[in-house]
Figure 1: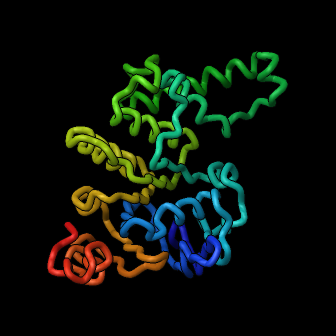
Figure 2: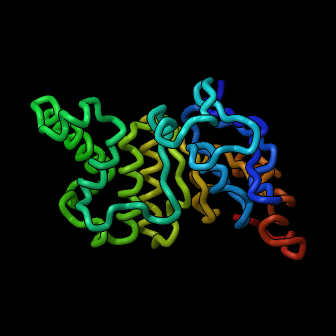
Figure 3: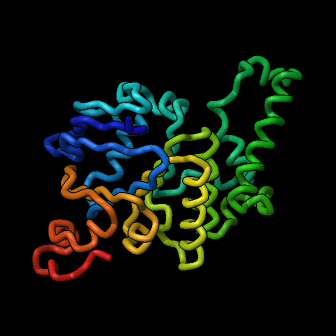
Length: 259
């Protein structure tokens, strides 16, 4: 059984179908690339999967359970993490505090215990702070734990966004344009991080416009256009697919290669 199953998923905005009767599976432990031209429905699909948008019709199942009727925080609790195109960091807070805040869904002590700083609440807070530091150490940001997020270079901010997403202990991680704006060294670092996450058993779906990254990183690629899947397969299958090339470049550019 696939880790994530999408059946007949549709999202209308007015008269526009941003996602149109889409069927898609994500298999456990794979890195799946989700590509397509601007406006193809990629980010809308992410927003449907993690509960930011309710679907117009269709359903999504995670580990066999229907999640398309759940709210975003409920889906996160089930083990689906997410990063975003634009930064959602607390820029005036330290790096460690950003990741610590990402654990808010995991608190077991009640609000009153936290307010009163009971022994139970203090112990839980210390344990979570250690887990936050462990994530930073794993992704190479431990030495910057006290730095304000706003002072980090762009590449480190993107890595910090991944650290925050890991705070919900995801089995499935949705990465929305993780290498956007990065220089070659930062891009290589992010590619290595994504590989390490998969090695730890995390299944990854990545939306990315950098085709070199997608082709080198992904086990399988799904191509969207106008909210529908127009092709899927291995990187080699996608590379020379005429329909994919036309979607990106138009018919005049169909002799080119998307890679």
